[in-house]
Length: 567
Image 1 (cartoon, rainbow, N blue to C red):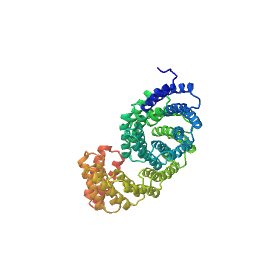
Image 2 (image 1 turned 90 degrees about the vertical axis):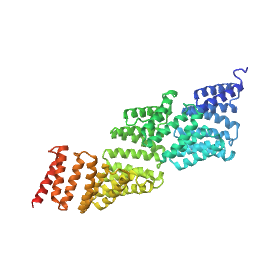
Image 3 (image 1 turned 30 degrees about the horizontal axis):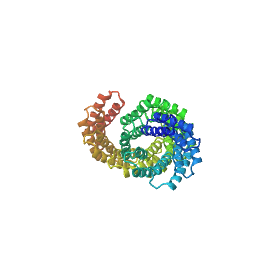
Image 4 (image 1 turned 60 degrees about the vertical axis):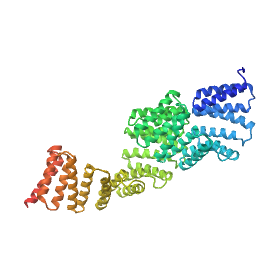
């Protein structure tokens, strides 16, 4: 039996700790690593390389538990010993540099993280073959940094290089492959390719279920990623179920101020349950303020989220306060064209828009667009949201020509990227038609309403009341253009649908009767015009009461038409 301070025991403790670490049992791993370190500190010189190994292992636990200052302390101790024992080109330097890069990235010190990544890569490219598994770790670190800096195409390239190496170096169900699948899926989700993102997240989930314990942080990360994906797809119930699973794991296994809990509180937003959402975000903020530097990007994210809840609760002034806190952090730590600015600018613009402060809203929407156009490829469908927002503000300000130019930018993208019968395309035709009506350009409005109708006739049943509404609108446009017989045919088609699908006393039927009466008057079929006017009045009296202004207006038209008959 070996004595309790035997060096072979220290090696065994390291090995057992590493198994616990891989499985996600970090408290147990920490305990074994500490026992190993105690033996080695007592039995070996202070600069012995085995002590560096123990310091590095303890740093790994602190790193994954997001206790950044302790992680850096132990990694630095490991690095100091390695410098005294090994040449600066030794691969062990690269390993420690990679881990230090991850910690600096986590605390928002991206330039320092990039410096350590670069040191690691420089050593590894001189030492290893181009498909060595250690290179995959460095490429993934570079990818994560590029992602945080908003360079998504570069990030994707690095993550894909890492995955290519891992597939050649590891068995198919290695947990590092799952990490790369997660990284690649996240980028595709951000870029709007939801189907591809889901396929990568599912691959990660399958591997993790086989090789990790159910409480492992990487499983929590995948659950949060799936929640984010379904949220961006507006499938909120599924999104919420993934966030709740992540939170359940963390509440059982983490301390109340663990930083990963802050991450989940930040994304776990009970849909339209604003008090619950606000409570979660405030918990996240409380944790982050205790554990992160005051200029960390995660704080900006949480401030944005709190602002969004206040915005949804129609407290725009308080929302703006939090949005501007987020912006103040981002202006200190991010390059001026970082995509995160786009989200903050957009939030601020929406708040000003809601307050009726249209010049301010327009200014921030334009800033949003400037960054989005740099970050996304030309014609990306996500640009249409900002084009529409800018168009709407111009319309509210009475500048319909400018509004029209932005809505046509939306249309250009949608006609190139969407199906010819997509409802979003139909909605854009409708908006453009209505802008032309405001401008009095009825012929142009008719052109776009007909395009809208063309889609409706392909996707709706022949008795759908939405068709009746379009027939009425197209009829009015023909009437305003002086083609009264054509107008009449559309009004009659609208009424035909309404009589099949609505009760006999619905106000929509009154509108169609009145429109028909107007068209008949214009083609001098006065008796029929009076007949339809009376039908409109009877329906409106039944629905609205005899004293309603619409009833009084129709009665005036009835008197006028009766007089024309008498003449």
